[in-house]
Amino acid sequence: MKSIWLNAETNGVGKSKSENMNKRKFHVLTDSGSDLPQEYFAEHNVECVKLGFIMDGVEYFGENGQDIGLQAFYERLRAGAKPTTYQITPEIAQARMRSALEKGLDLLVIAFSSGLSGTADSFFVAQKALSKEYPKRKIFVVDSLCASLGQGLLVNYVVEKADEGATIEETYEYAESLKLSINHQFTVNDLFHLKRGGRVSSATAIVGTMLNVKPMLHVSDEGKLTTTGKVMGRQKSLRKLVQNMQESADIGESDPIYISHADCLEDARFVQGLLQKSYPQNPIFISYIGPVIGSHSGGGTVAVFFKSRKR
Image 1 (cartoon, rainbow, N blue to C red):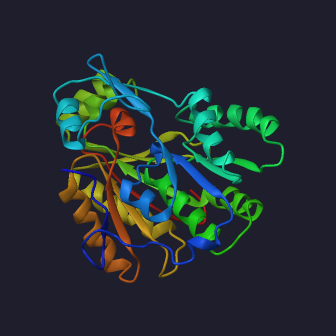
Image 2: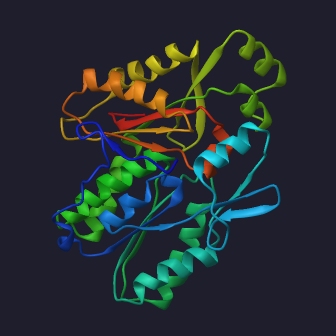
Image 3: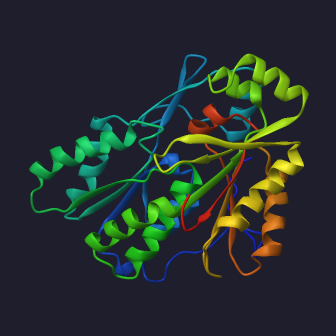
């Protein structure tokens, strides 16, 4: 099954291409840590640099790796595969950023959280080198301190701002002021996957699995994945995602809500249904958690992303 980008109102592929895209005065680039589907990038004229991973000795995605379907990836993950992820290098970042600069475009980059990857640092290294090479061009890099569709949601707000005709300086300042208001709420289904990643002990995984404990997590102001609590049972953990949003969301009727899932679409739809009751006017989108983040969170993860007063 390919990545699914569903709109709550149409129950189909979300078509939200901006009519004001021609007002944008610069190029926007992000990376696949954002977990936005390919149709989003195509419709909104946003460039995406792919992160990669190695599984069973084979390189996937990145600039030169093989492709793999998302369902196939999670099937292998559940079967015990242990993929290792890698960041975008400064050389790759520089090459992708240069292509826009060579066209005479200024450039704004929204990068995967520095609390989870060295990708943002690679973009900053590239920015420094390219600023000397292209002194007449403006180059801004935002360390999003976001992950998955949290980063994707920040990208979406930035694109909307740019398409309103904001300058690159105004859009950069907007992104910096907004990023710590992008709230990430996760629940993880597989404690043994967290154990393999060194995030919980073997004893915690065994006892937690026996008791059907489901950890609740979020992304902190430092851009790191941290535990906020635990509940008993899968359904309660999904309802807790919605409760956490209700307690902290700061959104208007036009603000989107993003849901990502690690090959558990029905659970994501369940959360979507709960959210529609509380936020009937808001567009709600669903997409897969990509392999880079899924390698660390495991199959069965569900997350909700929205704007709030603070994380």
